[in-house]
Amino acid sequence: MVEDILEEAEVAAEKIRNFDGKIRLIGQYDADGICATSIAHELLNRLDKDFEFEILKQLYEEDVERIAEEDEELLLFVDIGSGKSGAIHELILEKTDKEVIISDHHSPQAERTDDENIIHLNPHFLGHDGGEAISAAGMTYLLAEAVDEDNYDLVTYALIGATGDVQKQDGEFLGLNKDLLERAEERDLITKRKGLDLYGRSTKPLHKSLMYTSDPYLDGITNNESGAIQFLKSLDLDIRDNGDFKTLEDLTEEEEKKLIHGLIKHGYDAENLLQNVYILENGHGIDEFSTIINACGRMGEAGKGIKILLENDLELAEKMSRRYGRKISAALRVVEENKDSTDVIREDDTIGLIDAGSKIDEEFIGTVTTIAMSNGIFSDVPVVMGIAEAEKDKLKVSSRATKEAVEAGLNLGEIIEEICEEIGGEGGGHNVAAGAKIPQEEKEEFLDEITRKVQDRK
Image 1: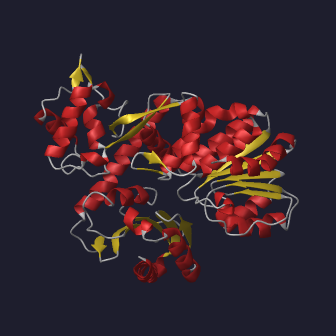
Image 2 (image 1 turned 180 degrees about the horizontal axis):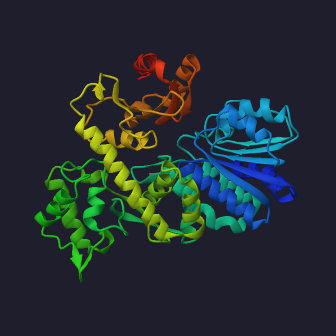
């Protein structure tokens, strides 16, 4: 239950309600961070507060130093403060009179203190797993609910953020997110039913939904529009209705059953696709909409993600979706064209590696890594990792662990944080997914260490 978090959030809620000065809102650029920022943006706007906001890829020490010098007296960090809470104490609280609120779910760098100038909302302090139980958007939603119960309509942003942070698995929201889902269902803000969980279920032509499906990977269909069309024709499914392309949502129950049986007959794992489907009020499936919001951040336009959420700008959402799809297709082609090159694709018993260098943009290596978990590129390895060149002679690392490895006790976030401390990088994350920025010259040391540590803990 979320009551313990609501109780903790009340102190922060009171501070926000009573604060009359300038506020700076700082969020992270992924789907969860954009959703958390949107929730905080809206709660401050509804209170008619004087605030500015910014979205960062990561919170580095130089960012903390810069923020410490800004004019705002109250700093609200969402999805980005816990991992740098030590630096926030050292560079802001000890050197300025600013007040700080952190609403996050990542593992805290520093323990809570008695300092009245900081309120640190984090599920880890209350015995909840921030990697699975609740996202930063969920934590920030509960802060908004503590500020005013009339902010209930923001709960869908929390679920979109949780989806982006892989806190919905096998069609089920995990942990405290279940309580948030109940809130959304009670208000008819989201609907749930069983069906084929394909991308763009209610907004994309059926063949496009199949083409965009990557988990599980549909050989000959995923990222192959003509293959998807031919597959549907082989099932004798009419993909048009009065000249317009049908969506999956347009199919009758019998037609959807025919599609399911066709997938099974062709050897595809249809059971993984037959799950709970969550449809938002705007008609989008929650997975699709989460991907669109994430895409805005990945393409350096997080502000458009906030606009899509707060203004329900579906035209902009469609535009960003098309742009992102083209970029992902290009990145996947790089993997496909280099799958026989051991300079790019290699694996051992522990790690499957995509060493993309400059061939794949750092903002898309995480998505490519996620898709690589299920598209047959690697055999049965517990961890898949992607590496791409980043700014300032750094490398971007994105890693994913299998569900089985995590259930056996593997925690990627802890491992990567440990290694980064040893080699002068910055990183961390959750048990199932983690990332890092490391010096280029430390790549082989990083790979050796993560292989050793995963072997020791799997």
